[in-house]
Image (cartoon, rainbow, N blue to C red; front, top):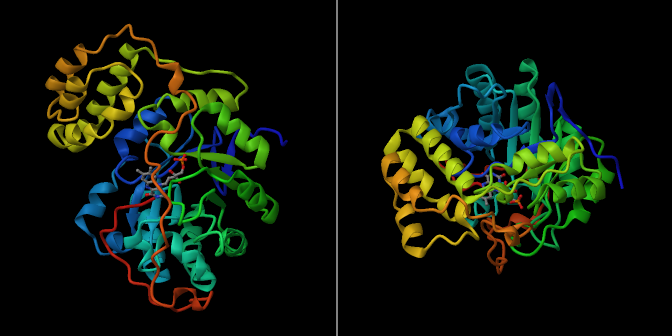
Length: 379
Ligand SMILES: Cc1cc2nc3c(=O)[nH]c(=O)nc-3n(C[C@H](O)[C@H](O)[C@H](O)COP(=O)(O)O)c2cc1C
């Protein structure tokens, strides 16, 4: 058991609580980051954007790259497979967007991404990974911006890559490595392997951030104690539960807080979320974006099917207000939900889809991996 850290240092950046909001495509936009940050300190990472989209001035990419006015630390996750595009994209993020942290995605398990050798497939090519990281760090260094990487254990149990990735990250000047304790093949199924996080901590000197299956603040403490990780990355656990960041901040500072909001308080949080989305995207799109969060907010509460259905079709803040009135504000938080998985889980993949001959060599230096400008699937 190791001592619990109370802050996190990533190069020049100090975060007051060793907690990172996991980048989640379609979720961790400016509104959601603000909502979470209102709860407690942490590092709140923007949803993934593609380096090629950024370099080529793609409209969708540009729209995703917005920050809340109160967001003093701008943190962005980049996707890319080409060292040149990645370097240029990092330069743009630092010079034009004033970001304070860049994370690189090497964990995406989506077949359409791994088929081209991107995301979770890329670390198999150790040489190419090194080139990409070197290029990113070289572009970020003049701005004193730390670069981190996020990855999985490997392609599958027979093709693990995380220990090599950690070594390469360290050698290329990456400030920290986040490990999701699953393989690409597992996607989101089964349980995250925290022993792999311990093994990576043993293997490298740079900070390791542990990721996978933190559902409550107590899980985060258990993870750092068990693995020696410098901090945690929290994804699905905070879906429909932004107050988890309040509990996490308290836990890392020695207080035992488990927020159990009544349905009335959840209602206020839902309203706040929809309002922030509307401020950032306009009311129509904001309300549309909000729809996907309804099931997560109401998980375990007794709200009826008809009301849930209408909430999932909400198209204005006024309608939302009317519908929220029908939720009983006195209903207590369903305590049986605590510690249980939420968000996507699914089944393992039969096999990991890779480019032809991908496994034949482990270097890949100079390889040309095709990169889409509008890849938005992420995790
Ligand atoms: C909806 C969704 C979108 C995701 N998008 C990304 C992404 O863009 N980049 C990334 O590195 N991981 C992404 N992930 C993976 C998460 O960042 C995280 O690694 C994973 O969910 C495991 O952590 P958890 O158990 O705390 O959820 C995504 C996960 C989900 C559920």
